[in-house]
Amino acid sequence: MDDTLRDTGADVSSAGTKSLPPVESRKNRFPMCVVWCPLPMITWLFPPIGHVGICYSDGLITDFLGSRFIHRGSLGFGAVARYWRLDPTKVTDGAGGVHTFDTSVRRAESLFNTCEYYNLFGNNCHQYAAHAMNLAGYQGKRDWNMVHVAANVLLKGRWVSPWAAVKTWGPFCVALVACAATGAWGFVQGIFGAFLLLVVYFSSYSFGYADPARKLYQTPNKVEQYSEDEVMGMQMHQAAGGGDDEEPPLPPGRSIG
Image (cartoon, rainbow, N blue to C red; front, side, top):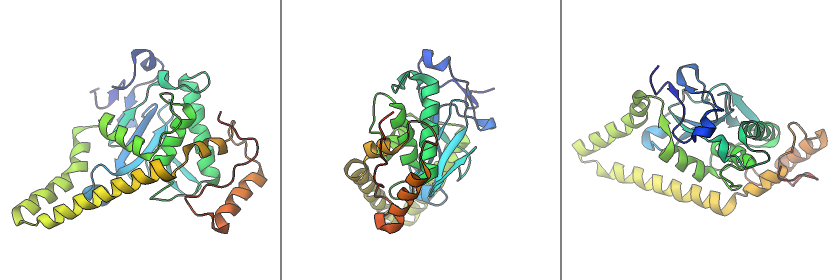
C-alpha cells in the first residue's frame, strides 16, 4: 500500500512510532493526528482555512461541530484531506505517552459535549483540538490555541493524496487564472485583504482574549466528573447572557490534571 494510505508519521520520533498503528486514510483511521478537511465555498476562497478534528491513538476521529456536540468517526464537513501526526513522546502531562493522550482527548470531548457552546469566530473546532493538546501538555505547552493548530496543520501537515491537494487549492487557482485573464485584479486584492483581516482577528482573539488556562481548570480530572448541578450552572451562565465566548465560572475543586 502506498505512502499516502499507510504512513508512520513524519513528525513522530522512532520511539513514538512503535506505539502507534499506521495512518490508513482508506479506512479513515488517523492515529494520534490532528486532521483537516476543506469547508465548502470558504476554502475555495481561502485555501488555508478549513475544519479540524483530533484523533485517538486508535485512529478514531472526533470534531466539535456544534454547541455541546462532539461528532465521532469522521470529519463533519467531508473526508480528511490533510493530517498532522503527533508524537506520543511529546505528551508531558502525567505519565505521558499514548494512554495519557487518549485520556486528554476523552476529557476534552466530555467538556465540550457537556457545556461548551460553539462559535465559528471563537470557540470552534480548532479550540477543541487545542484544548485536548493542552490537557496532554503536548510539547510541554498549556497554551495551544487555534492559531497554533492551524499553523502546524498548514506547515507540518501531510496530504492524504495528491488529489486532496488539487481539490483544496484547485478552485482558488482557477479563480486566480480567470482574474488574470480578465484583468479583475480587484477581486484578488479583495480576497487577500479579507484573508489578512481574518488572520488579524483570529490572532487577536487567540493571543489576546482566549484563556486556555481557564478551560484547563474547568475540565474535570476524570471523565464525566461533572455533577448535575455544575452542568446546570454552566448552562444557566450562558443563558443569562454570558455569551458564547465568555467562559462559565469555574466549578469548585477543578485543577489542571
